[in-house]
Amino acid sequence: MPEIKTPFAGLYESWLSRALDSAEENALDGQAENDEPHWPEPLQLTANDMADPWFYAMDYTKAHELIAKAYLEEFDAWAGEALGETRLTRVSCGLKFSDMTSPRQYNFETDRLFATCSMAFIKRLWKRSKADEHKTLVALIRERFTSYDGFMSHYANDLDAWPRDLSDWDHNELETLLIACLDLTDADENTLQSQMQDGETFDTIASEAMDWADFERRCMDLRIERLTDWAEQDPAAVALWAAQAPDQWAKLLAHDWDEVAALDLPMGDACGAFYRCPETPDMLNM
Image 1 (cartoon, rainbow, N blue to C red):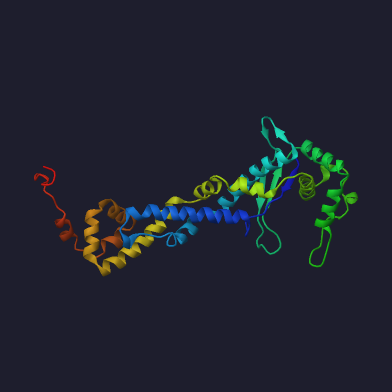
Image 2 (spheres, one colour):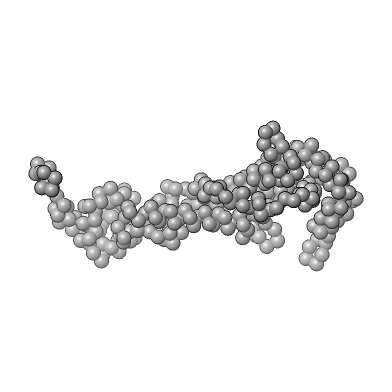
């Protein structure tokens, strides 16, 4: 099947990267909000506190691939509607994810998204362009492939110089044909962006690409640091809290037994203050 390069903004300072940033910010706010009721104030972490653990626990390679696949699915439906393409019972151009490549540096190019499609689809694009006498395609080829100072085109900027057989066109040439045909429609790219950003697409991607166990470990590292400071400032308060919140205290011990056990805390006094004899009725509930 032919491979075509799909029009794609890439993941460097684009609306796609900004949408992921926004999803991550929302997730961090949610994590901080959930954190508050479970930990005392000295051990609570804000969204800003969690930013570094989040960054290091996030698999951005996985997140970017998930975004590329989600984008291609949305683009396929959007372009299919604009071009009047359907597959079985759904609007679609029949584009299937092939690969996404990223440059080492984003100086001159951005990420590239590749998909496979049918030769029949390419021929229908050619037929659309031919109905326009290829005027839009010719103008687009001239715009995209004319060399200028700082850019040397590897393609002729003249349609007549391109291969006569569409099966000999490469992914860049096929992308140009696709863009030209979309330009002949009323397709609005803003609609594509809105459709993809509506709903929970980016929230789901951020969650799926996160190593939650690693994120929690890193957050617990921060809590242990704060616990140490708190214990130095007010060991009695720490001991009282530990007696009142055994589950949270157990989590800290499980995370770093040596560090927590080494704290000089009056645990005996704190436990005594909250001790109840199981044989003595609760005076408030008699």
